[in-house]
View 1 (cartoon, helix red, strand yellow):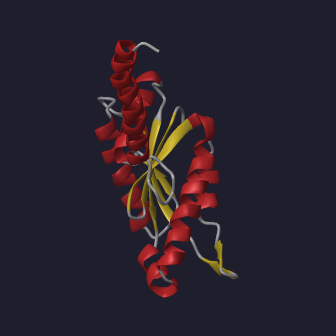
View 2 (cartoon, rainbow, N blue to C red):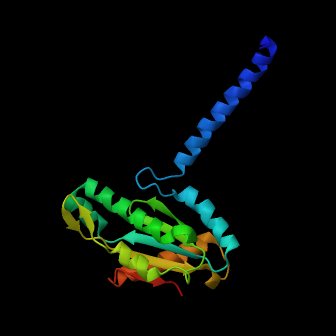
View 3 (cartoon, rainbow, N blue to C red):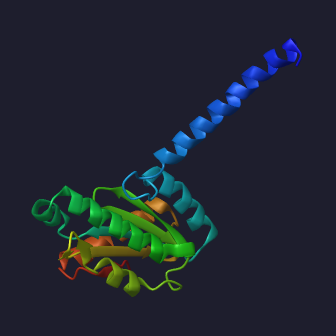
Length: 183
């Protein structure tokens, strides 16, 4: 190989390797290391796109009920198992109809193309199934708030999240530990 050609190819090869490393780091930064769900930034980009493309899209906010009690009683490993199970159940429910993310702590978020196509009751039931952990059955429960973006005066993700958050607190405040759709 010509020495001059090798000298010009070496920097290009370095940039390709560097670009690959940066790409992998960026992808891992957009995923929650515990649950594998999208982080807030990774989820937000996808949710914005989905809302723009699907006028009947809905945003859901999910908050685990009594998570601190579970953590304090059974330990942080049990709490981690509960977070992973919740993420798996939410991801499975979204399927190809949407995408899920973890905002942090015990708060999760999802966006689906059309709430009428997915079964919100099925998600509620799934999130209330007990967790098998170290031979014990640990209770899990979640409050879910949802907002159909078609019902908003302006279809934006921040407005949909605020409405879903308000609906989630209504569900949680009533002690119903279920789901509530904003109106």
